Image 1 (cartoon, rainbow, N blue to C red):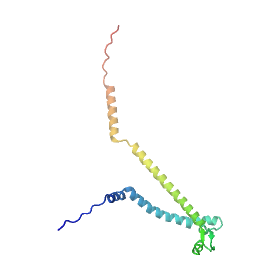
Image 2: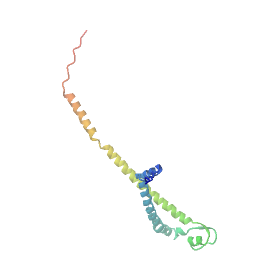
Image 3: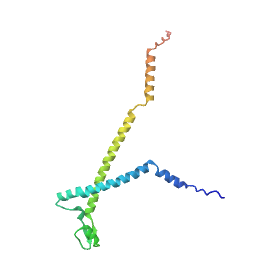
Length: 162
């Protein structure tokens, strides 16, 4: 009977496993999932709340239906025009995307700002806390100084006058 064939794990596979299991990669994956969910919320915020208010304020304009037909026949809506095979510039959808980007950018700015402030506060508190060994050394130094000050000083040797 022959011994079983042993397969060795390639070095690149070990490196890949180590890379995937690092905390930063897992954090990145979690961030992407949360970002996708956040994008859905922002899309709804822009399309369902902000654009109708802006459209009402400027005269009932629906941003999603602002488009320019380059070639072909214009239909009642952007989707109908695209389905008819016309080439269109979807200006309103582009405006929606810009508004979404600005909202996401603003939210990320505030998150990073708060996290930076928390990190600075945490570092400041860590630096403010003196290590116990340093406190002990300071006490020993102070006692040695106090002991030297209390000890009688030897008399100075007499000097010869010429």
